Image (cartoon, rainbow, N blue to C red):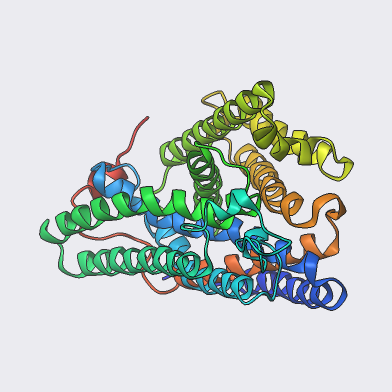
Length: 394
């Protein structure tokens, strides 16, 4: 059984303490800045958590055998989902109660033709962008994700206890249903929580963009926790071939994210349609964001393609950790850019509030995952593909 060592526990607690101080400082000094910081940090980590469910489900529906010896890692990652779901729900409730001003379309009078604040374009979207339907959708997404996370976790425990193939095939069927719901809910959640911050703007590939980002940071997180557990003497059946495969996934989805990023940017920027290009001008023509806009894209693309392309690089643990940290930083900055320009306009900048909350969320996430790892033996038992996974060669 895995136990959390004192160093890891103290480290996560220290990060959470920094986050709590930053949260208090943010709401004490500038609530308009604190709420967007809370949203983009929670968006980042809830994406990793729900990716854990996706990873487990993907292995089932693909009948994949390579990952069985490390399946406890994504299962533990999805164990963090309930906490971040609660935080997300609180943010959205605060939005519809007008405790924050993240979503412009929730402002009073926006949909009322008799109001001086009336916006004809947003009024045309009222059937979708209204407080009741918005919070109902959010609750639905979170309930669906958490239900399947709990269901797949229980099936995994039951499989260890009973063995046989019946439970495995039940996991396949459950995962197939999750994939259907996840395809829809992940895209709609990205529209609701992120894209509607800039409600006049829309992108038809935004759902894919967010999925690619969650996959890139999700595989990166699975890789980092796997390497950590290996270093601590656990996961003895995980070998360099498993690490190599995880490295390939990190590399692949870094390129997928870059491809979608470029496709979205190039088509909108060069078409130069006013209602579309304003999304990028708000980021490229403001000094507070311009550098971060290019910097986040470059490090998310250049670091993996230069440092992880070769086979040997994907088997070098030190290099994998270094590149993984760069990728997580790059996508954290990208998450900041998805939220802040639309909420704070030209007044946004990265400071103690944003960084401190980010560290706090990281500490909370690390603690939740490590705690989840203690609940079940790390060694998988009775899975029909266990021997295949133990003898993986690539």
